[in-house]
Structure formats: structure tokens, C-alpha cells
Amino acid sequence: MLRTSEGRAMELSIQDLTKTYPNGVRALRGISLTIPAGMFGLLGPNGAGKSTLMRTIATLQDPDEGSIRFGALDVLKQKSQLREVLGYLPQEFGLYPNLSPEAILEHFAVLKGLHNRGERQAQVKALLEQTNLYAVRKKAVGGFSGGMKQRLGIAIALLGRPRLVIVDEPTAGLDPTERHRFLNLLGEIGEDVVVILSTHIVEDVAELCPNFAIIAGGQLLYTGKPEAVIAALRGKIWRKVTTRAELPALQQQLQVISTRLITGRPVVHVHQEGCPGPGFEAVEPNLEDVYFHHIAVASRADAAPIARTA
Image (cartoon, rainbow, N blue to C red; front, top):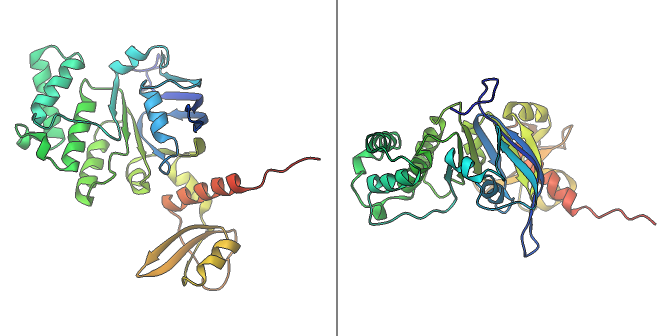
């Protein structure tokens, strides 16, 4: 088990990471983040820079500037050593459709350096059982559902007992049953392993992660514990069932952080110190309110006119 000299579980330290693609897109803008052992949620909308950050940590691309350390490892300089302890499930991955889960895991186990046949077969069997795929271990994966393929993907990522596990948008497109099955699987990985769950689905983070961060536009908006940031919003989130006709005025006059339809009627959540007006009721904030609040604040900052001096 990889630990620090003091015996603590390893943590991932990211400092001032920047990345601009040749087309001019600034995907990462000075990201600094410390990720402890256990489940860590990385929340952000599509295009926020999450996948760029995950691919950089996984040594699949280099940043323009910055550093990444995993315990004593300098990730950007010791890529092969990092890969030995890394398990990575990208947002999109390919599988051999005519092969069985057992054959695929055997193949990847050899690539991971598990050359002892007995050890390799024992680990493959254990992972097939852990991911609830043992009963279909001989079937071709081409006929698998999306959830079954995701579970096989995490089994591949867990080969070799990695100390750093990265999963990028793992539940997108899964039905509720498969989503909960996959989240339960992630929750079983272990407290001594750094597990980064990158997603735009707030519920995934709320259910699993004692620590999380919000990223948007390549910038870090918040990092901390869900309960702490939820407490900071307590008494400041207001809810109103409104009409489609009234909605534009509310969005213009107030800090509306989210709008959704419930039984066909718009329901707004507003961030404000005191009651925004008639018809509003105070509600207990949740992680979704936190997320939308930080995204809304960042959007307003980006949209604000730049002050010019004479």
C-alpha cells in the first residue's frame, strides 16, 4: 500500500495547472486542488474542463504549466510509475464486442503486469463477482447493456489494486437501477484509495463523496465538504412556484440560481439574504443549490463588463 512516510494514505496535490488547446480553448486556468484518500467528487457542467483535468492526471496529456504530485511521485515526470498505481475509466472507452468479460479482464491483467497465472485468475474472478458480472463471464460483451459495460470498465480499472482511481462521467446515460448499482460499486473501493468521480450529475456526488470541488470554465469555483457549504447557504435559498409569464421578470430582478418544471409549472430557487418577495418560502439548501449558486455567480462574473480606467 502506498503511504506517506508518516503512515497516512496518499493524497493527490495539483498546483497551478493550466492548459490551452491549439484552437484557443483555455480548458484549465490555474487549477490548484488537494484530493485526499476516499471518494472525491469533481462537479461541473459539460465543457467545464473536467475531462481535460482527468486526462492530465492520468498522464494522457501534458499541461502547459503546473505540477501534480501523488504522494512522493512527480506525476508529470514519473508517468510510468504513476500508471502502475492508476486505474482509469474514461468517459468513452472501447471493448472487444466478440470477447467475454473474463477474456477481456485476462487480457488487461497481463498488460497490467499480473503475470502469475494463479494470482491473475483469482483477481479476475474476484472482480467479476464484485461487479456482478460473474454469471455472464463467458458471454460476448457486444450484447451487454450500457450499465454492464460500465461495470466491466470499472473492473478493468481496478485490476492490479490501484491506489488512484479516476472515473469520468460514469453514470451518464445509465438507467436508475444501473446508476445505483454502479455508485454502490464505487463506494466499495476503499477509504485508503484516492477515487475521483468526475461528473455533471449532482446526485452522484451527494450520495458518495465526503469531499468535492466545483469547476466551470476551466476554473476552480469551490472545494470543501458538502455539509460545510450547504450550511453556509442556510437561510439564503428561497423557492417560489411561478408562471411562465412572470419568470423573465424574476430572472432579471433576482439571483435566480435554478428553474425547473414541476407538474408543468416553473419553480425557481433564488439566492438572497432576506425574503425576495410575496410567494417565496425559505427552503433547506442541498448540494444542487450549492452547485447552481456557484455556477450562477461565475456566469455573472464572466458576463460583467470589464471596468476601464481613463
